[in-house]
Amino acid sequence: MCGIVGYIGKREAYPILIKGLHRLEYRGYDSAGCALMNDKGLHVYKAKGKVSDLEDVVMKASSEGEDITKSCTLGIAHTRWATHGVPSEVNAHPHVSESGRLTLVHNGIIENYATLREQLKKRGFHFKSETDTEVLVQLIEYTQNLKQCSLSEAVRNALKLVFGAYAVAVIDANHPDELVCARKSSPLAIGVVEDHSEYFLASDASPIAEYTKQIIYLKDEEVAVVSRGKDIKIYNLQGEETKGEVKEVNLDLSMLDHDGYDHFMLKEIFDQPNVLKDCMSGRIVESPYSSAYRGHEGPESGLQVVLSAVTQHRRELLRARRIIIVSCGTSWHAGLIGKQYIEHFCRIPVEVAYASEFRYSDPVIEPDDVVMAISQSGETADTLAAIEQAKAHGALVFGIVNAVGSSIARESHTGVYIHVGPEIGVASTKAFTGQVTVLAMLSLALGLAKGTMSQKEYDETIHELIQIPEKIKKVLEQNDKIKAIAQRFAKASNCLYLGRGWNFPVALEGALKLKEISYIHAEGYPAAEMKHGPIALVDEQMPVVFVATHHALYEKIISNMQEINSRGGHIYAVVTEGDEQVKKIVEDIIEIPQTIGWLVPLLSVIPLQLLSYHVAVAKGLNVDQPRNLAKSVTVE
Ligand code: G6P
Image (cartoon, rainbow, N blue to C red; front, side, top):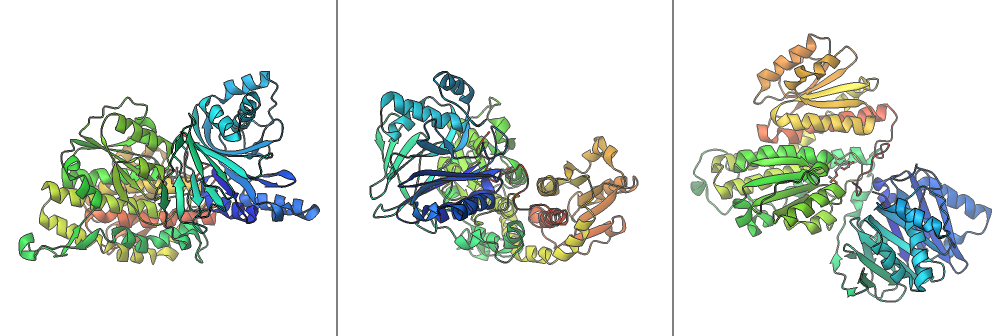
């Protein structure tokens, strides 16, 4: 978490830094700060709160004195998700060294900061903040003083003493033409231009993309020196020069705007029909085989799924004895749906693990296991650590990631991008349906190749899958109705989400969405399991949401509803259109179009996304930036 931006070049740094921070605010928004350098030295500004609060501070300072923002062409900036120390101005980055010469921004956690801090205190260093970051800037200055070396050498030597994760950018008041940055386990992208006249630095490509498409992603334990007019220099911690690989990154910048919607989350919910088409595009293609070859009379989609990762790693995937899915949060819920797909279509046993638990569980991983990492951001620290474990045991790592070029994408042996465009709202929506769509395509491609699914079921499922975007549009038409229902949830303190089979992970996801952005305590449960505990919570104050579509276990879920009904609970249900039975038992229903059972989650989750959105809006909360959360969780 935390977002870093840096600029060195010929333009005014401040507007670039601020725009970049706004783009990275999804990574944390507890405080913001920037350091700007001109020929008069360093100027540091900080504010508790959001990037807009920092803008107010800088504007006030400029109106009261000289507007230094106009004369600074070098700067670093930061938006914070607090780990060590409360959100406050003093804990905000950049942090400045004892002499005031060095200033630094950091994303990550320095695990041995307490010991280092004590040692530095004994050597006469003073600390203003409670952060681990301040230790790092002091340590760099201490090293530089001791060895009388360059800033980059001091950074390298200091980082050798550090345990933990970092992406850092440092500037030295004595060297106004140079910016030094480094990374380990936290992402850092450097935008380069051909004539080396300027460099852009950021935690991801979004603040850079409008200036250059040429991006170098620093690797672990690399330190880069960028200087105006000079070629970039990259070193490992031992001081040996390494070569940065320049990648061309094409980001659709229109995805980074609200586009007339009140919030990113609403836009991203409404984006789903289009982005799911993008996700399937080029992957569901005309089949070269005739209907005679397919040999059945079911719907003849005439289509097939082609995923290059499956073609390239066909042998390892077909011989996989087990698939272990590792992920966190919403991506973990997508993993639960993926398990159902893979087990049914491919008959491969699947385990779905929380990455944070998996990494410390001394897991049994065999070389013929496939470890599948699912992540929207591609930067989740726990998922990355799980990948490392998998690689160490010789398993094939298959990434399902949205953020192109992200750490998980790079660390995986192979994988499939979700291709739903950048997701800015902290609560994940389109990334979830994108992940489920990829998992459906993957299990279809693998199931057919393995011979564990019939051509008929393959054709029928593809035929339905390509209709999902249009069916989502139909669900979205009920936005006003869902908004009206949401008003009844706004006063609730607790809420229960129940579903079975394919809809159980959807119930979990619905509950997560509600608690993330409306701060109402919500639990997702398998509907039948509810009578072993949560039913004790049911009273007239508690809304209960059933995901009760017309599929397997439908009759059973009706009985579960009766159990809640007879205890005075207020039931709201997501049902298949035309359902007459549920209507009679519940307070209100939201209908979704008919589809096959496997694909129901892609439709039944949409009303739950909208419901949580409207509840949060009704409560007057910040939907896109809910308290305490961040979109990219780069710390454990
Ligand atoms: C955070 C986000 C969630 C996300 C989870 C996993 O908690 O707020 O929306 O589901 O991280 O992130 P990933 O990027 O790995 O999918």
